[in-house]
Length: 89
Image 1 (cartoon, one colour):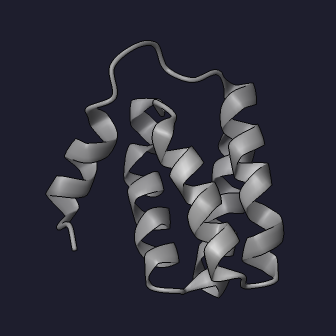
Image 2 (tube, rainbow, N blue to C red):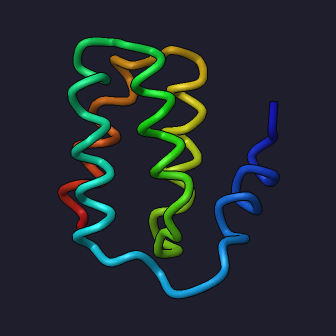
C-alpha cells in the first residue's frame, strides 16, 4: 500500500495537459452509482479511470484520499468526498 507521499507523487506524475472540468465531472459522475450501491468491482474500475486523468493540482490530495477510501471499501465515507469534488468543479 502506498503512503501519502507516494500517492501524491503517483497522481502528480501524469504528463500532458490537465483534464477539462467536464471530463473530471463525468468521471466522478460515473463513480456515483456503484459507490451508492456499494459495489466494489465497479467502484474499482471507475476509480481506475479517475486515476488515469490528469487532475488539477488543487484536487490531487482529495483524489488520493478517495482512492484510499475505495481501496479500503469505505464507500459511505467516499460518497461525500465525491460530492465535494463535483461541487468544486
